[in-house]
Length: 103
Image (tube, rainbow, N blue to C red; front, side, top):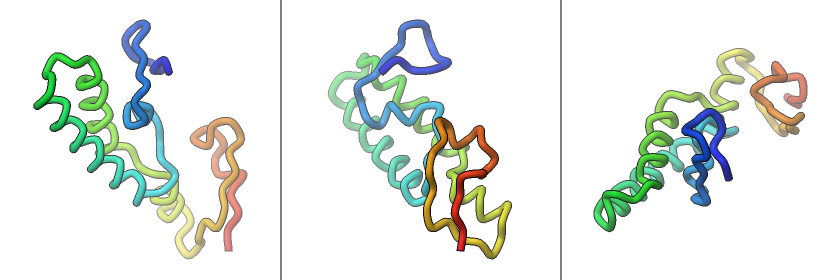
């Protein structure tokens, strides 16, 4: 997969690298992915410090620390409501929660 908004022709096949420049739906998933990314960084750094995937994972790790998840932002914006389902409409970060079902 080519990475959006990054170095020209930069791509990755690593599932953790796909998170670069994306939001995750669940905060729990974001935290878990952050841990997995850190573990992979340590592993790659030990094996081959010149591996180009290391740079992608390091940038992913930085972004995962500062990008909020959908459920975290939803709880801030709509206290007292709970997401029970979510359907994407191409890009959920662009649609102002118009496709969210609450209870």
